[in-house]
Image 1 (spheres, rainbow, N blue to C red):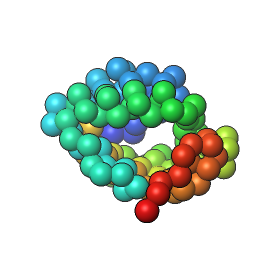
Image 2 (tube, rainbow, N blue to C red):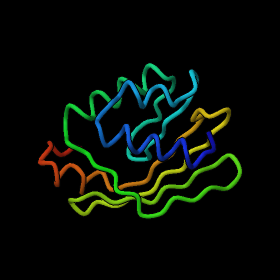
Image 3 (cartoon, helix red, strand yellow):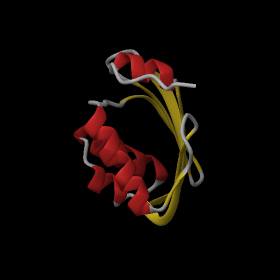
Length: 119
């Protein structure tokens, strides 16, 4: 699959809250770095991360724009609550090798009525 196709498949699995299907899209040694969090390394830890996140909140990714440039796909997204963000996916051999996402963690926590971090 081309990078855009992988990301479309990723969005479908994300919107179903399917951590197992998401994990299958990552290379064994992939890195997922959501800049509001520490990087997560390895398919198993990425699967665990999604499982925990889906247990916390109902998340929906609405594709605003999806671009492809070589082995990269760039996703601009929103959600029904008004949160917006973007993600960069490096795809080789139909598997995500690296992902970086940008979004406002404080807004996410408030929208989902989750505990705010303490300093």
